[in-house]
Image (cartoon, rainbow, N blue to C red):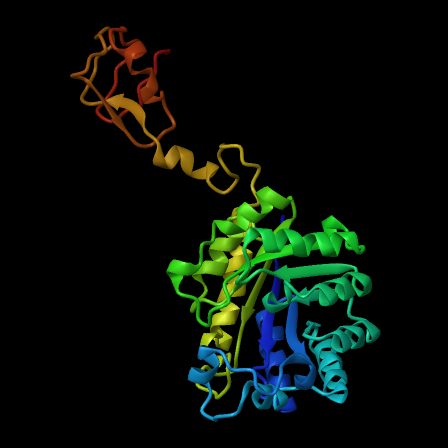
Amino acid sequence: MRRTLIIAEAGVNHNGDIDQAKKLIDVAASAEVDYVKFQTFKAAKLVTKTAKRATYQDKNTENLDSQFEMLEKLELTEEMHDILINYCNEKGVRFLSTGFDLESLEYLSKIGIELAKIPSGEITNYPYLKKVANLFSEVILSTGMADMEEIKQAVKVLLDNGVKKENLTILHCNTEYPTPMIDVNLKAMNYIKSILGVNIGYSDHTLGIEVPIAAVALGASVIEKHFTLDRNLPGPDHKASLEPRELKEMVISIRNIEQALSGSGIKEPSKSEIKNKPIARKSIVAKKGIAKGDFFTEDNLAIKRPGTGISPMQWNNIIGKKSLKDFNADDLISISI
């Protein structure tokens, strides 16, 4: 059975608080996701001090900090990384983090992270892509805001610098928080696969859990979804994140879809339904009393459950034959003594 890799994106929803980050790990572990993912960066390496905030960041945060000031408060120190990695190990969920600058990539590689998750904003960052390819054996690339040509160029950089194609997964993504349903364009996920022949998945920013579930049904091998302790918390990403109950429901639904897709693809009765065949199907029965020697006609035959007698598909073969015995109403018809 194909198993979807589920990444629960805690991101910066810890709000810079290590205890809140640990609670997010608790939620992810309880939901039985594969990875809980944070973000590793130094604000000074990520944005200029005059960089504007995104509209959704303005809308979802009450303070008037610049993007630099906002991100500076959301940095995870190396000590915090150690705490969170150890806590993930205790809780039985794998730790993952996205590095947003070259130094962060080097740090994550140094502490043993082997999977790189490239965020959408770095898809045109040549030095960053090359560094990822040099440091990590497995790569997941998000493609929000990108067109097909930009995706091709990014993939070429990764492959040219050592990433094996079978170890690369491309995530279809829309970088609007939350993403309007009309803008999801979910069919683009398989379009990417048809053009590039790579593993595909989906990084979701819609409200709710329907779209990632649909993505799994369409063949996504990786699902990434933001989650939070409470959507009403202050911070840039909380409003577009799942709450704990929703995250658990999403995981359960995805695992159910995996089972639903695990069949052979051949249309045949399943083990669970075979027992219902004689109960749900019908047989040819006597509509009324039939004496030995009478001919079977449409007037003295009927079709009723159970399906343990002659199939109604034999109707034309039975009509006109002579009864070899007496039948009472509702008796299953037989054509031998």
